Length: 365
Image 1 (cartoon, helix red, strand yellow):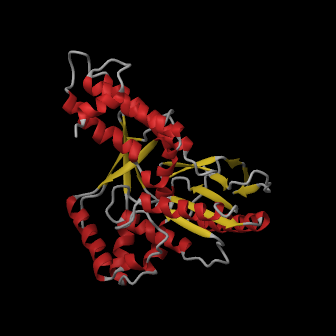
Image 2 (tube, one colour; image 1 turned 60 degrees about the horizontal axis):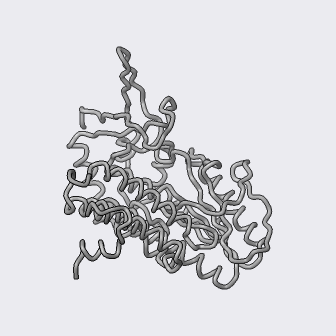
Image 3 (cartoon, helix red, strand yellow; image 1 turned 30 degrees about the vertical axis):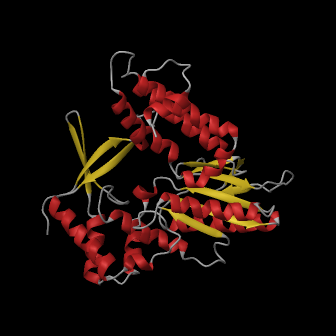
């Protein structure tokens, strides 16, 4: 047995405005090297010897080898495109579970592990590693140590794999419980109900939401109704839908939802997504511009490297999903403006310099 315990460190959650709230911090677990080695060996045994990863549902795209956000987005976008192209309807529910990684019960973890082909001794070892954890908080001259009663150790090697085992219980439910299409990427869950009859779509969606809500309660999880988005994807103009209730809260329909970093709007034209990424890329470029002047600062080669490694990934993330949006002049102009700004920063050219000529200067044939 290991005598050296895990150490938990509190770090700030980025993007929070009020750091007086406990939710504005995240606990990162720092484990001893020997404990990490044990976790690595157990994970290797579960994946390579027992092939437990192959037994998990294929609709879980997160925290798995060979899966990506682009594959998950492509699956969702493809289903929506096929239905609305036939002038049908797709009701998408993008659920957000509140601090799911930190709140899942130890009982749910134990049940998920015992359902696998893992031997009882190793299964009990994993349960003990997850449940026997303590956190120590130091503030000024006071010190408080308490035992963690739920959740996975963030930063643990086994934690992502164990989370997939818990969620797999939801994804393997029968179509009678979750009619329609249900997909997960780690903590993000999306439900799609398609068809031509709005009443049938509404019934399927409500049944799926109720099933997910009941499942979350059995795992000590809760759905954040404030962060949950419901979008009706259709090209039809005249339609009505009854209100949808999520955990006793009526959710209004939204015109778009952000899923895995891509803003998907109800018409699938991705105008809002391109606006968002160009604003983000422009803000990052303006920060880089502070280090460049007409006769001083970073050289063009360094500026080009910053553009290719920082700005271009922001613009090209999952571009295979929204590439058709660039067929419109409005969206193409937004992207060209970002590139033009980057070229002028690289070359030190005047603001009105044509970016086409600058592009040929930077990238000659």
